[in-house]
Image (cartoon, rainbow, N blue to C red; front, top):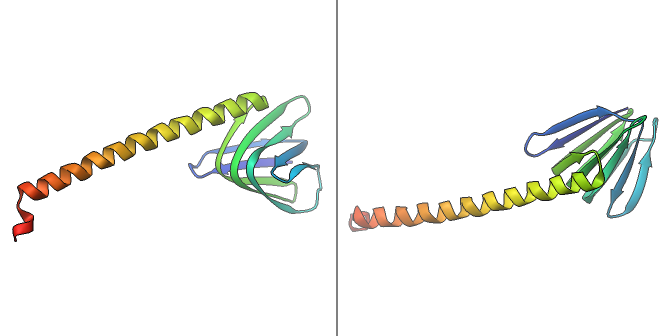
Length: 129
């Protein structure tokens, strides 16, 4: 079986898996080969993909999961992958913190630009035309 994870930033994870365990706000669900088609919403949760001797965790925020024809696709606002749940959560938290800091910086830059625009309008006496 194959899984694909797509985020708003265009990040894509693709790999094979034997079965998946989905943890969302409604509880837990396992998906095995030839599972019936299903669509789930994951507000805040994770997916554990199990391969023969390996596990991969994907922490998801605001995602939609679809399983059909042995292909599991996740479309998510944000997602981070890791070899353990703790590492995937740590990567997710780090990514969220970086985005918050970037947003704060962009808001400050926007305020400065708006201030500069007002000053230039006053200096240009555009209001007197």
